[in-house]
Image (cartoon, rainbow, N blue to C red; front, top):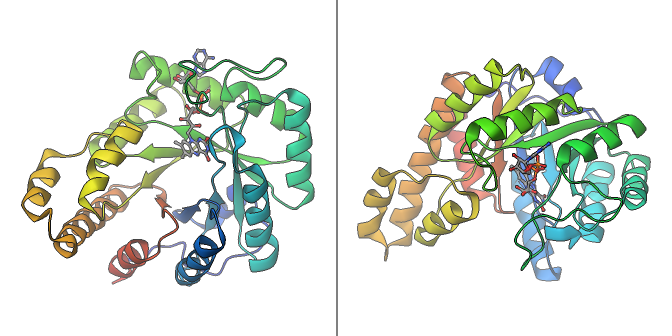
Length: 299
Ligand SMILES: Cc1cc2nc3c(=O)[nH]c(=O)nc-3n(C[C@H](O)[C@H](O)[C@H](O)COP(=O)(O)OP(=O)(O)OC[C@H]3O[C@@H](n4cnc5c(N)ncnc54)[C@H](O)[C@@H]3O)c2cc1C
């Protein structure tokens, strides 16, 4: 199968413009490296990933805005020095309207027209999200504010197995519809391991009148410890079959890696065959697994 986004990238396009020529997009998510050593590792890994000519890349925004400076510096580098279509993640945790307006002004003047706008998680130790004075309670409010002021393309977060705070998937979908109506141009999903959750979610979203692309977010499991960690982090169901298959090989990292990769390749292939509009890879700043999935899908 040939991923149809594998054509040369054109600098500085809105992701919605990329959609016009790419029925499926392949994108990579990075986080800002934390120190010099991590930056060297990042350079080596992204060098490998960029050979795959992704449709776009994105850079996360640390919890509570903790990486703001490094996120902004990295999106500037990737967009303006490397020449990639780059999306900056941004949340409104601890931010009032003037700060949000100033940050988005800074990013758009830098040439960043693609923004993944989210509410963000409550700061550690704070059970529930409390909006800043003169801030935003939900991503939909942030998105409406940003869309009124800036000519930007906006991605929003979607949760096939429901956002952890939502009372039900139905209630979460109602809120998702409000977010899309506020100006979301496309949705990227939380990671998941069982495609039925994704396809059920997409059908339910369509039934609610959500018609933008819902791009699945995928993370390959490459070590045994990740099984519990990824599940706990995201609330995603990890298939029993995969756990049972990996359990006997806990002391054999190479075998665990192979099992995880086989699973991820099958998952990605099935998503594409069943009509998903591409794949967003949570790369964790590593290249090997994503490159292997790509090479297999291209065969
Ligand atoms: C693809 C992806 C990338 C991410 N990247 C980052 C990142 O870089 N940095 C980071 O800090 N976090 C990131 N996150 C995590 C995200 O910030 C958290 O999941 C956060 O808790 C919710 O953000 P949101 O924008 O989805 O919130 P919202 O859409 O505001 O939803 C939050 C909760 O409020 C509910 N809700 C929404 N609107 C209403 C309403 N009008 N009335 C009542 N309830 C409502 C929703 O159902 C949900 O339970 C990412 C998540 C995804 C899926």
